[in-house]
Length: 100
Image: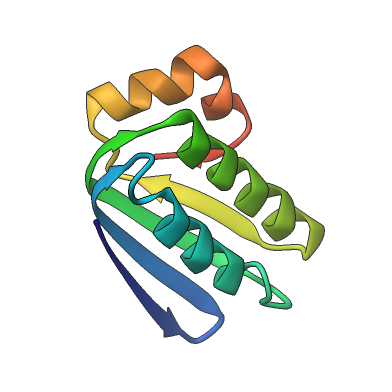
C-alpha cells in the first residue's frame, strides 16, 4: 500500500493506493494519526486506487472522522470503487462519512 499526503492551504489531500488489510493497517493508522493532530482539519481522501479495506481499516476511517469532527473539520472520501463502497454501505459507514 502507498499513501501520499499533500497539504495545500488549510486542506489535506490523501491518496491511497492498494489494500488496507492486516499487513498494511498499521501504516494506514500511522498516517491517520498524523492527520488527527491538525487543529482545523479538512481532509480529502482519494480512494481511486483503494482496492480493499478490512474492518480494521474501517475502524481507522471512523477514528479519523471523529477526530476531524471534534476539531471542526470535514472528511471526504472520493472516487471509491463499487466493491469498497459496498463495504461502507453495508456497515453503515456511508451514513457517517461523506463519500462522493
